[in-house]
Amino acid sequence: MAKKIITKITNLESRLSSVDVKPMRKNERMKKLIEYLAELESSDYKLMSENGRICIGKIWNLLGMPSQEEIHKSKEKK
Image (cartoon, rainbow, N blue to C red):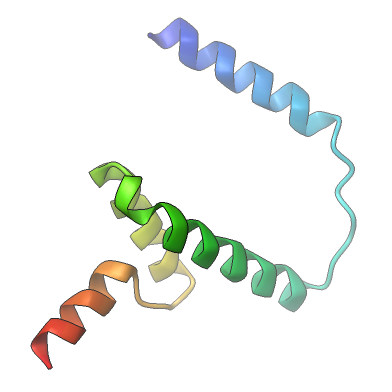
């Protein structure tokens, strides 16, 4: 299993090293990050593992925004 993970990381690193990253203003990058994260969460949240849901919730919290789980809990309280 560890060998598979190392292989996947190596493959990912080689793909990323060949990608040209275009400069973008910080607020534009943040806007796109939030947009893509919201899209990912809305389309795949039900399919995610519990660990994936926790991780995506932590990312939202780092961005200072509520996670899907927090939104659902607040809706249930009302």
